[in-house]
Length: 306
Image 1: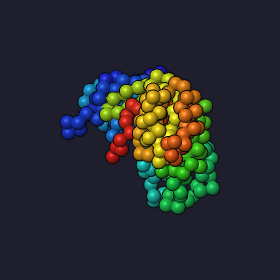
Image 2: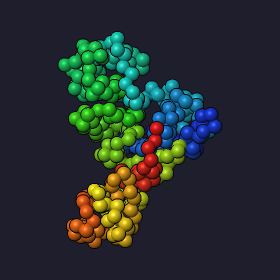
Image 3: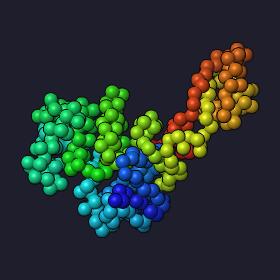
Image 4: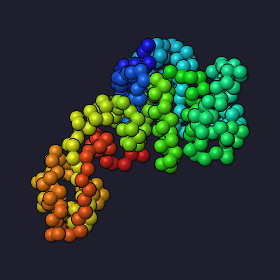
């Protein structure tokens, strides 16, 4: 089965190309991540592959269906967790699941059979008869995830599923997504959280300006794009230390705000210098391994995107 295959995908709005020739495919049972700053084209890509937006060019095969001609048939076997919760405030938790299941043509008896398991999965059994307005943000997000599973989908699309949640709620959502992968489900995830991507995704595509600029496992992306060690230097004397010493010892230095980021293959000499930096005033530092956030910022830039 072809879960999802995208080739040459393009979409423009008012002369601006939002998706600019994307190619990627999904493997069964994996979590595939789309990472990118605001405006990179992630949400538009999801809408295109679901057949909710018409592409200018390119081909999309979703669950063995050509999306251009059979999008409705493909979506019948897909679950979607949108960026913003769109639960019906007039219904209870249980009624939201019932109505959504009926949209997929499931019988009332079949939906009623599935609801207890989904409520348990979302840890909402005790709130089954509660109105949506009484739920916390985390509860609403878990209900939206449970609702996306009502049709037992082969493939689940998640558009920034943990944005706005506190750490406890985020970790619970992560655990629920890992459970889905253990059951053989395939996930396509967009996210701004690098720790989320590193924890969940088997492979990642980093997007910017509608293009995939790097793709691979988290480890592969780090190894291919960034020096393995980072020293973050901050404090009143950080800039002076960087000018006098850091730029000579590091392979690359970047200043952002009050912090100087020094990238290198061997930080031993830098750390030794910083341990004896009294001549440079108040300088503090953090020595760590490079991570996915370093890769993301190197490839897409540190400037703020609105």
